[in-house]
Amino acid sequence: MNVTIIDAKDNVAVAIEPIAKGDRLEARGADLGVTAKSDVTIYHKVAIRDIPKGQPVVKYGEHIGLAAEDIPAGTHVHTHNVENHREAL
Image 1 (tube, rainbow, N blue to C red):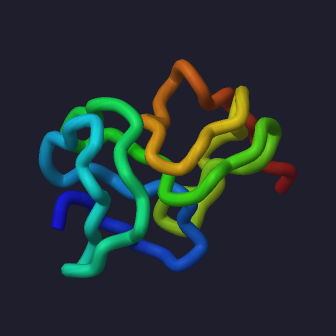
Image 2: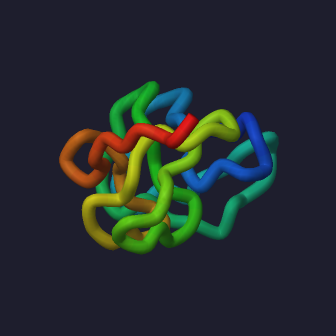
């Protein structure tokens, strides 16, 4: 297990150990069918499915921003490819 997923709605997982480019992502002992496209620092996010530009990035079941570009599964998700977005209350 090298990532954790908190909510079924999540489209990102959190690295719970350093992940090297080419590593398979595993959560709860199951292979997610996703290969890391780059190194991912521990506690950073990685896409577990494709996130099209403009779509919400979902972590812990909550929208945390919008994809600033297409984010393929296995890609490191951080400030370089996520833009801030305030939800309407």
